[in-house]
Image 1: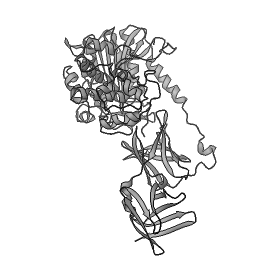
Image 2: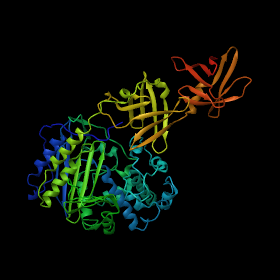
Image 3: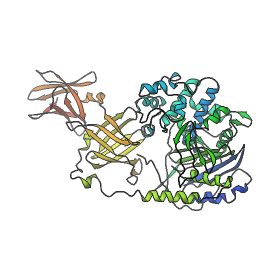
Image 4: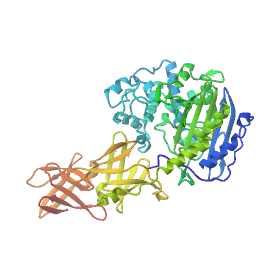
Length: 595
């Protein structure tokens, strides 16, 4: 299970800014390049690209560092980065276009347009509108690990999971970020237009805005000769390459890849009321509404650290706030190996794009503030030092605790045989994972990879990622535990994980299709016992008695539904072939050999 937050720190060799577009230097940016190179050094990033737009002109565009750290390939203004959740404003814009064409309305219940979108209760089914979804006020929590950890290539599969997602807040009562709601918006776009979300983005936004290099797929990113490689910082000292994360299924919430050349055109359009080179791409009605408060995120009361933050709200795919007296519209983006920020100061006609090939990087936040201070002629504040100090303090307060359940409770180190935990576990809102054992060690396999489960106490385990080449990595410990639960007979029936601030329970599944291997005739004291399948249900017939229903309780173990306290266990040879069955009864254990 990958680490949710990755922290930074490696001293790099001096980083080289690559050859860039010939933009005349602005006096407001004197010494700016040195500040950015210092950020790369202090935050130990591989590379980044920055563009600044004023009104309808790009006044600064430059790449720093490396798109490929190992090969020392420089970042250019054409280098493609994953922009993550900055994609949301694109999806919202498509809906804005369809509204202008009279194809939909933001205030109409969304299921009028897409009945396939089903929520967990009648209130949401009858009342949720596109506006509710666009401004994150449905009452649903994030459920992000459903699409991230339990990945699927099918949008329909992800959409189907929404009906099992339980609200944790009243409808329209609280802002709660939710990627599934932007997935659903993208599918509404598809439903209304008859074309895929990807085709809509390409033909209605990329094309008119001359965003010639941008794409919506990780496969397209891989094919680009100028694509950035993603990195994270390991052990606060090692720049480590990370695999690209394909998120095409949840694409409308965050799968766009772009560069600062293309994103400058996007920013220009928003700064100019939806127009690009004099042609209307987005209506002024929509752009103003999208950049206006639709839902309160937080009261935003000024604090000592942020005395100029006067409010915090959400529009349509944009976060709204204030920066030192200036109206701020922005959205960040994060996905494995990449961080991004698109920032607009619409009343000042200033736009900023920052793309970094580093996971959960602080650099976009720091660089944006540095730029704003320069352009608004504000007294400069050392934002780099401010964030370095905050991160250092946070690390100091997270020292690992020395004691554990094992050291506090006698006998907590007892662990069951690994085979007792084996099986497939499922949750309708998330998906499935499989528990298997290898040489008495437990492993959990998800759609995106495998974890080694290290025993902590009782039936509780700590997951560690397993790399296909390097093996188990015990240096990164995620704040997640896997806990198995049993029934009154001591059999494992489910597994829980503390995901996204809630305990998610996965029920052990019964794979009846695999029961055919148990079928056959078993003999004990010249009496023949018949094990057979009735449909997909495993049954047992004992001469002179009724047919018994066998209910799986674990690997090769079954209980008799009709008789309490009676069970059977199938025994295997070295070739994993069934050779006998043991009947476990109150008066003893009896073995019948397979004929």
